[in-house]
Length: 63
Image (cartoon, rainbow, N blue to C red; front, side, top):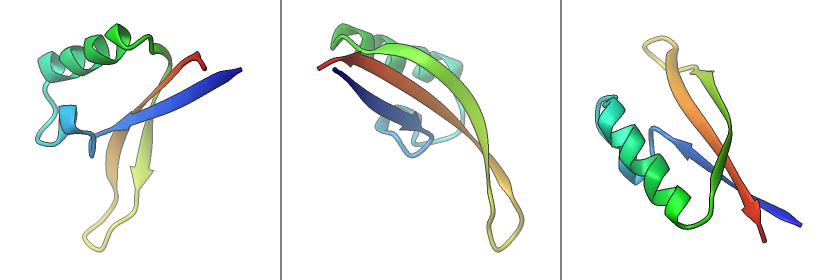
């Protein structure tokens, strides 16, 4: 059986402006826990002042 984790810009690793080094640090931290990246996508989030793009990283590991 597999389990999944989603990392978005609301995640502790990406809580401020986008920083590739912070993203790498977060992915590596989850990898140390056995998580593997299976997908990266951009979601469009509607808002009152217009839509914004948010990166989503999906991880999986054996449960």
